Image 1 (cartoon, rainbow, N blue to C red):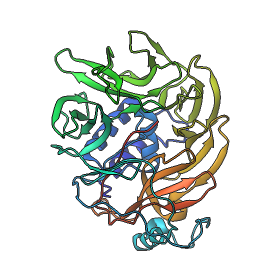
Image 2 (image 1 turned 120 degrees about the horizontal axis):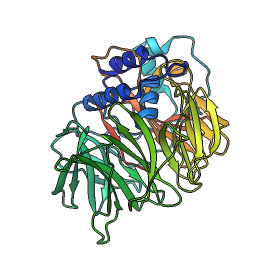
Image 3 (image 1 turned 90 degrees about the horizontal axis):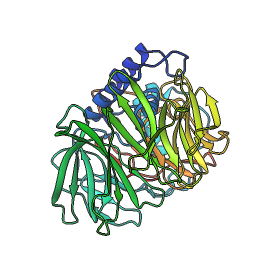
Length: 418
């Protein structure tokens, strides 16, 4: 897990003020910076990752290095250790690579991953099955099952408006289509609908797509043009079936919108940026207008605030909608919390940096009550590999290791989930 590019993003953020300070953030500049970081496929941690998450809705995948490998880390070997509930260690693990690596090795092992993911050339499915990934022409930044094959975002953008090429592969691995697009996919709560955004080079306009992931003969589904927006991120569906997305116009900042994909689009003015939706309970999470330092959850139909939390940023809702991820603190990386989605109260918190000497790249839900965290040893230079593993953190406050520690050479790409 190489951290080149991390310093550049942190520097860009620091020039605009601390994320949790009160100063206004330059969203356009941060969006451009985030796109550059994604192209370089480097680790973004803490403040940087949370800021990017809030601005361009990237709670998802940053591929960790430039080379894909055939080997896949094995699930962590079982131990009899109890859950890690220790306070901050005496040594400063964030500054000691060897000690932090050993501490990562010493974390108790827990359950295997329930989320689906790509490592090397193998896709690991939820039921434990393994299937070969398509033979791509560039590094994969995200992928999703589609019509018996795969929809894949690859890091070889062919247009300045996008960060990827979206390629569709059929069940045999043959390429069906290739268009420039955004590397983020959104999926409905029941897994039946998939959304993505592409750039129509001929028309010079963006297009949102929403289609049945399984296929069933209905073609590629609805397509809706996104007007003047030059950068669009599909976020997720809400109870009405509308697709929530974030649209940016060069020089004008971002807006949060919802569309029925049949020509009707409405603004959600109560949010300045959006990161996730809860289709079951009809809620949307993001940041309130202003300086970007207030997390807010709103009603998907009216846009009215349900609750807010000053000095926080939000991540994804749990699949059942009971919890939502929260990020807090002034240190880089930020603390990770599981919040009660109904009122924002803290259920459990982990300080990976302060207590374990770790940074993290991605935080997503492993199941209804535990997070999967792609973590890496924080200490070391940006030119060296950083050992890492996927950790599980749950509502009881237990932190365990779901995979063996790899030396920093593996790239994990998690498939989208609600």
